Length: 299
Image 1 (cartoon, one colour):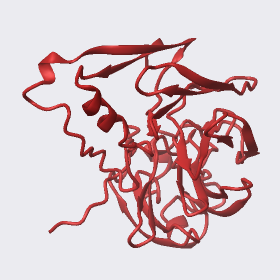
Image 2 (image 1 turned 45 degrees about the vertical axis):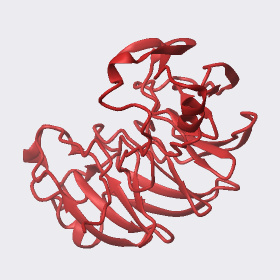
Image 3 (image 1 turned 180 degrees about the horizontal axis):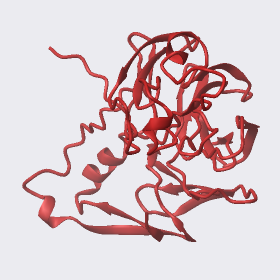
C-alpha cells in the first residue's frame, strides 16, 4: 500500500482529432463494463507508437493518503476517490471541476477506497464507516447517505456497481472474528435497501458447512474487497467473496465454510441465490477472491 498525493494522467501526444476521439469513449465502471472484461476498443495507442507517450497533465489531490481508486470516465470527466473525498476532473486537462469531502471519525483501519459507480447522472460510493452515498455527477452535491453496517469491525473499500435503478454494495472486515460479508441492493434514488444477501448464512445447506454444536465458534468471514460483475443478458450478479475467519486457524472451522472464498451468483433484481464456485477450499492462508470475475460468451 502506497501513500501518494498525485495522480498522473498519461496520454499519447496526438492530433486534436485523435485526442477528442479518445476522450469520447467512456469507462463507466470500475472494471470498464458490467462484465468486468476491462477491455478498451480505443486504438490511438498501439505497438508502433507506445514509445512516444509523454505526460500530458497531472492532478494532485494534496492528500497524504492511500490512492487505490479505479478511475471512472464519463463524457470526458474523470471521477476519483480517496477514503474521505470524491473528485471530478477534466480527463483531457486534469483541471479540477469539483471536490466533495465527507469526513467520518474514527477513520477506518484501511483508509482507502476503490472508486465510484455511475448511473444516470449520479455517482455512488462507499466509505470506511460502512456508509453508501450518492452524489450529483455534475456538482458533487451529496444526494443521500445511508449506513449498511451490521457490526463492529466492518469496513467498506469496494467500488459499487449500479444498474437498472439499483446500487450494489458490500462490506469488508471478514478477517475479524464476528464480521460476516453481506451484499446489499440499494434504491438508486433514495438509498433504501431493496434486498440483502448474507455471504455466510447460519441456516440451510451452506450453514451446515460450518462447525455445528452449542460450543462451535460462530461462522464468520466472507467480506469483499473488490467490485462485482454483472451479466446484463441474464440478469446475474457475480459476487467475489473473501476468506473465512479466523484466517489461519482452520482447526476451529473444519468443513467447506460456504460461501467464503467463492464467486456467488445472485439474481440481480431480487438477491435470490443461484449458484456458487468456491475457488479455495479449506482456506488456511487468507486466499480471498480479490478481483472481480470476467463474464464472457465463448464463440
